[in-house]
Image (tube, rainbow, N blue to C red; front, side, top):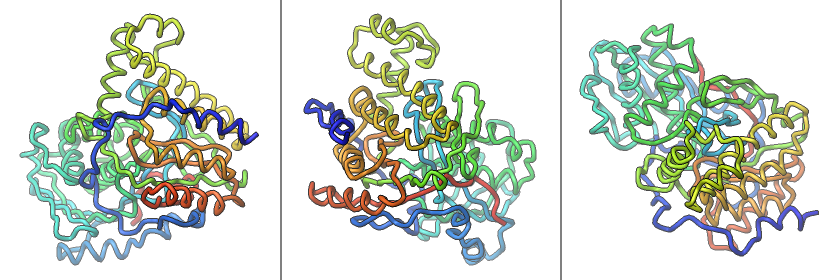
Length: 444
């Protein structure tokens, strides 16, 4: 049985991303987290429901704000990172995705101002203050660094007609979410800022419309930061609920909550951060190239997006470029895998998701060519050590893999992965176990 599960992973001709396409480790897209799971050992204890609030000391964040600005904040907000269970690179192809919110995220304290200026400080980077006048924000000349994600939210909210010209803020940001790990630290920052601005400036029409907020947060990343992402990350951070995955149609914005009760099933989701950082805003790198290839394939096939391809074989026969054929095959089959995963989850057959995880990883490795040696090793080792299935998650070219692991095998699988990384000379991975957690919200 084990040999049959592992056989597809052990092909000798596995394609790899070109070295030139793999982005160099970037500057942090959001403030560095104040804590991370340790690498090189077994997985940390699984986070249980109720532990999310314990991770955040709102009084500490508010006190840090008061120390920084000499006044009290009007509130404290938090937006989580996310893990995508299924549906990679399908969001910008108008397809389906299936994320959950994580226990870790970005917390901020904010006080509104009416002077049209913003000042942002990070608990992790006290010497890197970000200041800007909201009227001066220009997507042709973005701020750069993690401050771009904050400035982009102000710009996008004003462009959408929600934020008045004189609306400003003083903000203190804290984070326990690792950067560059494919867990959407940038989207968590965007969503926390947007939710806080909407509440603090009394934008009731926006604050009560999470789908609209996701669109604005995505606009910040696309139009101001310059990252060609879909709406997956922002929607997950804003719209996920505890104990459920979010079944999101990226074309229509329609979404439904799908039960994902890992505790009841005796399972945990093990997140393996390979510590190979990726950067979605790299306009010349692998992510941008995949976006362009999918757009070109849709144009050649005469469809609005690859989501509209119904007959895969017929579509592939009309394409001459073998690279485009591979990209189309992945996107179309990945959308079907989302539907398969949702069906299994609704039937309560969570253990059977493992086979879908495995198929998804093989497709991302072979057809979409976005995996790395570290991600492949994490997936192969986890399955060999007893995981029901595993796959890389996120944009690729680094970041994290996820494994569906029986609770009693969690330490064994985590140790096997850490040992395999050490034996292959890779940097020790960070290992975390999580359950589906609440979405963005005001904490006080």
